[in-house]
Length: 294
Ligand SMILES: Nc1ncnc2c1ncn2[C@@H]1O[C@H](COP(=O)(O)OP(=O)(O)OP(=O)(O)O)[C@@H](O)[C@H]1O
Image (tube, rainbow, N blue to C red):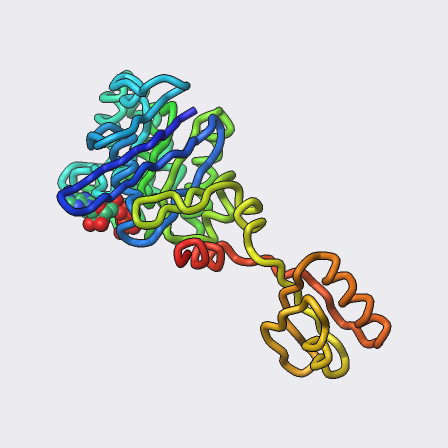
């Protein structure tokens, strides 16, 4: 388990990361979301030890993470790490060696992953000659090569087409199913919602929400849609209901409680002509907007 405890980073006038605490449990995929400048990259750099915290600490299996622990973490930095002028297979094999793999293992595994992700005919290509999406695939391969104990990935999915997103998500899931904790940052909230076991929302350097997507949704207001064959205007007069929008027979509403919602449904049924009564599941983007605006 990877732990981040009270992590803080102060630049001259900017507190880029402010008392950030969260955990990435073994075998879980945690999405790290937040707007531009929220502090995600700075936090990940401190986790990897490439940037010193002003305060706080990073733990691995419950004790302060050492340099040796961190050399076994797979990292995809924001600035990306591959040299543009070197062949992609040679370079990945070299990185594998740096992670302690034998020459044969490093080359073999790098080649296998490049082939798996559709780069089998580009093994000798210089990185700069690959398309951006293919460079991104190579960067992710670089992060997972050395049999990492944890994965810290800064925007691994940006610039990937939908098929590549699925391939890379499968690759990450293979690691979580072996117990590896995975933390990745992303601006693609629908993707985070779909892939992650947990979400940490950062805003202006602070954690403003965290939990599973269902837990985050639990804090959102209760909303329903009621659709009737006749006019729905009468709903405005029902006690305990705030009407958000009415369009003909369809009304979006916020009941004070589930009980009030059920009473409304009973009344609608007694009036006749109920077409639909359903709870609205807020999107992660809506939740994000609410917590970031609070
Ligand atoms: N070396 C630095 N010196 C001064 N301020 C910095 C430095 N690095 C980052 N910052 C500031 O720290 C804050 C957090 O930046 P960071 O890059 O961690 O955000 P982020 O969440 O990764 O953003 P993005 O989604 O845009 O990549 C920003 O206000 C940024 O300007």
